[in-house]
Amino acid sequence: MRIILIGFMGSGKSSIAKLLGKQLGWKVLDTDELIEEKYNCKISELFESKGESSFREIEYDILNGIKLIDQCIISTGGGIIEFEKNIELIKSNAKVVYLKTNPEKVFEFTKNDDHRPLLDVENPMETIRTKIKMREPLYESLADIQIDACDQSLEVSTAIIIDELKPI
Ligand code: S3P
Image (cartoon, rainbow, N blue to C red; front, side, top):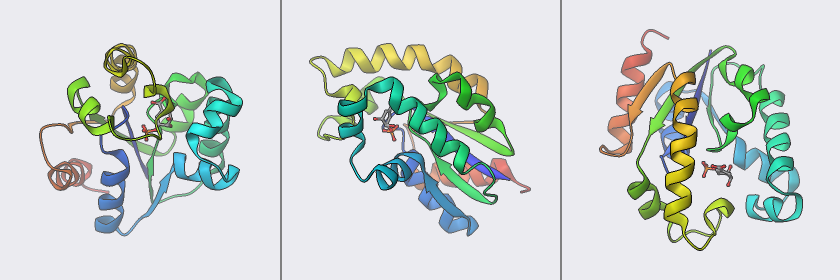
């Protein structure tokens, strides 16, 4: 069994994955980190040099490459659900946890960082709203568990996930 965390940028996937990994004693994998390691460059550089659609293919290859690893927590990039080929991979042998957030929190959380190329635009708030609206039904349709991640601490979200996943 694997636990796959999905949700928008800034919803806390990477941090919650680490907390879950610590508590369950499971390996933690992060698709963005695996991509950066494999290509030895930042996600923003990959977006710039290859474009978003090639990035989605790369994301698929990474997810496909780890599909047989059991007892792990996988933190995914927020757009992974947009690529049809990823859907089956996400659902395979996994409990899918959707960390729901809202545009204001995402904006607050991401406004000072420079590693989210999709938000490096003139009006990031508008992009955040549009993309959340577009992606939300996809996240919801994939989720076995949905957590309201914006109104509670990372620790509380983690405890709720562990509770809802019982018995693993
Ligand atoms: C993306 C989210 C990012 C990263 C890339 C694209 C997206 O990951 O994969 O910048 O399309 O939402 P995080 O969700 O970890 O920020």
